[in-house]
Amino acid sequence: MFSNQIIRRNAENKKHMSRLLGSYRSKNSNTELVYRGAIHLITCQEVRFSSHSSTSRKAIDYRRPMSTTQEFPLLAATKDDDDSNTKNNTSKISAYLQLGKAKLSGLVVTTTLAGFVAAGGPLYDQAQLAGCCVVGTALCAFSAAALNQIYERDRDSMMKRTQKRPLVIGTLTVNEAKMAATLWGVGGTTLLIAGTDPVTALLGFTNIGLYAGLYTFMKPRSIYNTWVGAVVGAIPPVMGWTAATSGSMIDLDAIILGSTLYYWQLPHFFALSYMYRIDYERGGFCMLSSQEVDGERTSSVIMRNAAYLSVIPFLSTFAGVTSSMFALEGIVLNSYALWVAHRFRQERTNANARKVFLTSLWYLPTWLVLFLLHSKVWDEDHDQDVLRDAISDFVHSVRDEGRKMCIHERVIDKTAHTTDSGNTCPVVLSKKAPSMIRSAASSALECEVNERVL
Image 1 (spheres, rainbow, N blue to C red):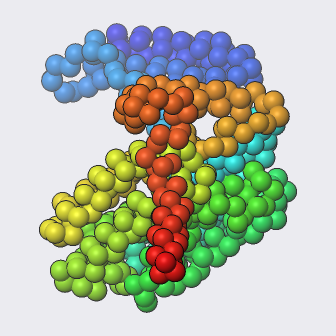
Image 2 (image 1 turned 180 degrees about the vertical axis):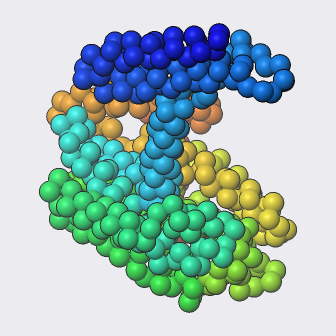
């Protein structure tokens, strides 16, 4: 009797709820879900109370509140679908970033921007030019990385280091990767053509071909693939310079920047390939470290290129591109890099190879900062530009603070009693050595001739 009354009451409530919610269903699309959830709640209440008339003698506590999933299964299902869609979208974005090797492309962007700033042009007026150069270069780098992964997806699946790449695990299909690589490549090259100059655009397009073409082709066939890959990494700072100087590619500053990136990459990557030599061998790649047993040649190449790298600050100073302090600070910077390379040369272990690799990670940004800090472009007169003037003022303030801590500025100046602190620098003095030697030699020769005459 009691159950029948409750059932009739719930039926009336359901009709009343239907009339109330029916007027709101057209106003809001989400009201449909609320409407269905409410009807379902009333239906559940019917089942709850009507179950008292069941023949089961088990005592049931119907006062315990039901969970949201039990009360509103349609709302819960909708929420799960939204969460699933969000996760899918996030994983897709992450997959495309991995396809473009975002971290490596970030390094490319950094060196490109460094090359642009190193030209010392009117940075505020050239902001749009810089943006086109950086974004275009990044898109070209993304395209090259995507094409590389498309070609190497089978080999990547055999390596522990690369077996979670999107094409290996199926997050992206090959067609999706091809479409992305094409759009990135066409977009990047077009942006460089339209926003910079033909030389910069040609360098960007060439880099795609070198990395996705020649470098990728050589990896399973020749140990010299690493040297080709180093050329690819040396081009971006040159692109930044050419964009800022309207295509001037053979300037000494650009050559120094490109050479630094080239020689830096060889110790960096050979150390990495030594740590993963077994993995590279498993993937069928022809790396120098996987072609030898004891790592003798790998350690020799790392040591030799670290030595080449340590000479560049002196060459930059002698050529008048940077101030003498860059050479002196380069001694400290490169001494540690050479010491780490020497340790690996003496004891060829994964731990020492890892130290070489980690050192290379902070070495490059440090070198670039010092190069920009001591570049003589900031001493040149230039048209007024807000951003360039701000950077120039900052550079000179840092230099002034550095002179206060410099030994040869503080000590040698006092002994020389001169106000021209630049002339007391050992590096600057060493530039006069060849002329001094020639003068001394000619004087000695003249004395010898005079003695013979007498």
